Length: 168
Length: 185
Image 1: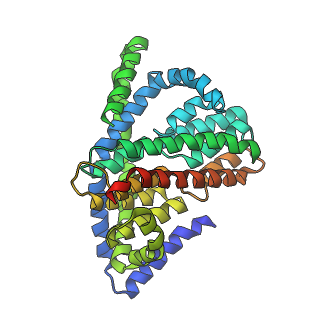
Image 2 (image 1 turned 60 degrees about the vertical axis):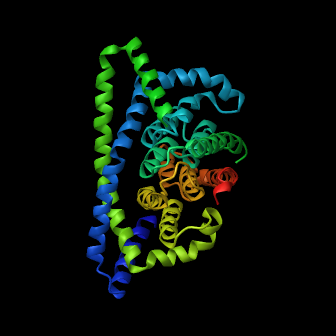
Image 3 (image 1 turned 180 degrees about the vertical axis):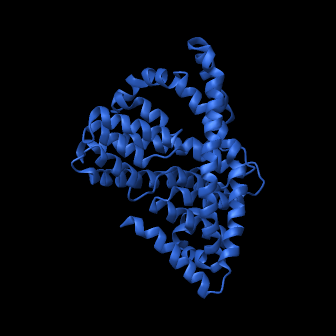
């Protein structure tokens, strides 16, 4: 079902543009050129953030942080098996999906741990990645409060995920 | 961001030097090469969606969508121009539909237009960023298909918890941004 939505929407859009006598071909290429510039603009920022994330993973810093934070997470009701996953979620989407796959293999797809991990995956975002590319577009430098709000909200979502999966 | 980044790199490199100094540079070049590969695939995706968005804007469909969502967007973002409103409307509706790849270019375009060359973030900018840090997706297809491929008996029972937690977090996020960026409205 969901496979039909997008292609149909695009067909409708093109028909609509034709009726409205818009040069859709010209518009598309104009937008596409902007897309090229956009990716070039954000490329250095993506490289910088990925460099940090990969270094942290392979050097064992995330492992160590996960071990250090385990008692604190346990105190908040977060399963200690999920420490690394919770830490990586704000940094990398692909990386946390791979971890989620591991979690499902190890704990089974219907266990409490997996359900919590799925909820965290579905409610969280890659905050650092989003901030790197969104703030690459503007000249403002003081972004601290906005970043802090987003991180706080993601952290609350983790705690809520653990809570809600006990009841639902 | 600067401090976070420096900390990430320096701490990791120190760890690398203690554990296995030979691989440090390989990891760095590998990860930068990987991110360029990522950007090349992003390039294809962004070209497609930016093209589609441009058609939406030129044909006036974007403004229609914006008109529909205007009351909500004005409530969240305060006073913004119609063009930005249209882009934010695309950004939010793509987020809800789970089209992260289409929502980001629209969001970035809106962010660029909001830039006023001043030192501090304004309310609409902070709101746009924070909303994009909340996941608004209604139907988490990737997670569900992953669960069923692992043999889950009821793979979609995760939707309800996800929607409840997302909604609570979204409200919390909006309230916090409103409180902290109140003065610039």
